[in-house]
Structure formats: C-alpha cells, structure tokens
Length: 351
Image 1 (cartoon, rainbow, N blue to C red):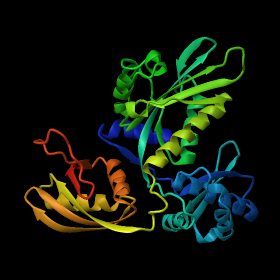
Image 2 (image 1 turned 135 degrees about the horizontal axis):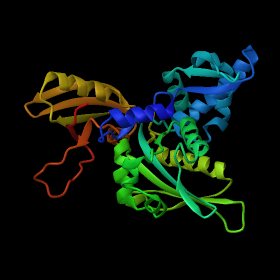
Image 3 (image 1 turned 90 degrees about the vertical axis):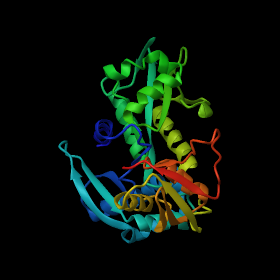
C-alpha cells in the first residue's frame, strides 16, 4: 500500500509538494492467532502503544508506564477494528483510534505531537556485497526495500525508494550515492516530490560478518555522517528509526507548548478571488497546530487572517514549511530577506 501511494504521488503530484498527508497515523495492524476476545484485546493494547510512537515521534512512548495503564481502557480510544484474512491463512487485526483522544493522551503523557503532514524523504541506498556495488530497488533487493517501507510505516514516516529506471539512472548512479554527491541526488529526488533526500552506503567489515551502514542527508547543513553497525536487516531498520527520530525533533511540537494557546496575524499575498480565499482558509485550518481561522481584512493584494494555534510561533512556522500552498513572502525589492519573528507574511501558491 505504501509503495502504491508513492507511485501515485510520483505521477500525479507536482514537484513543488513539500510534504504528504500521512493517513494511517491513528491506526495499526498486527498479526493475531485467532478472532478470540483475548487475542483482540492484547493486540489492540499493543496497537495503542504503537500509535503513540507514530503520533509523537518518540521511540520510548510505548514504554511509558502511564501509557501502559491507559491500555486497560482500550475501548475509550478505539474507533473501530476489523480483521484482514490473507491468502496464506494468516490473520491481521486492523485497529483504528480516535485522533482527538490520542492527541489528548499524548498531551497528558507530556510527549511531543507530530502532525499528519510530514516531509517525504527519498532514500538512496547502495550496497557493496562481494566487491560488487548495487543500488537498492524492488528488483535488486526486494526484502530490504520492503523493510524500509514497513519500518517507515511503523514510524509514520513518508518515504520513497527510487525506481532506478532509465530516467533516474540518467542523473544518478552508484558513485553519486556512494560519495553523497548532493546536486544530482537532489535533482533526481525532485521527480518524486521529495522534500528531503538521504544517501546511504552499506558494506561489510573486512574479514567479518558484521555490516556497516553510513547515511546522511544531502543538504549541506546536515552533512554529518551517521554510522550503524550490526546485522544487515537490523541496521537498515535502525537507519529508518534514526531518520524518523531526527525529523520528529525538527517538526514535532514541543510537549511543553502543546497546551499553550496563542494567536497570530497571518498575511497572505497573491489571492485574487473569493474561491482562493476560502481555499486558503480551509488549508490553514488543516494544519496540525491550528485550532481556528478567521478572515480579518481583505485588500486588493492581500488577505489578513486571525489564526488561533497551539504551541509556539516557531511550531506554526514549521507547519507552514511543510505545506506547498504557502511560501514565505520575500519582497523582490529586498536584497536580503529579513524574517520578522512576530509576523507571518506568505505568498499563496494555490492547490
């Protein structure tokens, strides 16, 4: 399912998309032995803890003792459940939870809150195996590719493993990924509407069964290498975990500010008709930090909104960064862009 969504994004979304809407944050799927009440309850309680990890971005959320106590009242949080019987005879339980109640629990536990709009990350992974280097694709390493998608799904992370077809290979090859050459990798990643790109290389230690995986973002300010050592499958999963945790630190709302209510004046340029004004208002209302939006003033070249939001102004800005409909306004007459921390002035990009 994750791969299908990515393919749809590839063919139908524009290259300016900064983030995708993660639609399965408040649900989890687990294997169960049968349809008995005991099996369902045990799986549902585990699902609640897994959802807390996805929604908060905190890998330790499922170990929180208060969270474990709340699983005793699992019916208070569940929206519905259903069984998914596979052709091979295995049985899965799909549990869906009420978003508002999960968010309230996240706040109660003092965890960060990471909204449903999250950056799409392109993962370029090269492997050196028996002195031969190859890029990971569905054809070359199907199990590792599936592992990346499965682990990303567990963390609520939007990722794409590039197709590595003729179009990709005309821009990027093994040397570019192995050496983390940012420009061609980012150019190739733009085809997938990825906001972030990482390059990774995996190889075995000399005279050892142990594998090493080095990965890093392609953008210069995050050029530091992250190294993982261990079993091949485990370190690939650990890479996705580390990636998700890093992005959560960047985009999730600080738990100390989740309960804080604030307001801001939001100035939006480039709106020419009432339809766009209504679209912009509704788009603002979908941001995870926004609780209410009102139109205050309209001029020929700008609309002023009053926005109530949770968290800090910085949290509001981070949410806006992930939405392609809004772009920070820069006066073309200014040689340098100066950001006023107390005002929000943006350009409407349309939907």
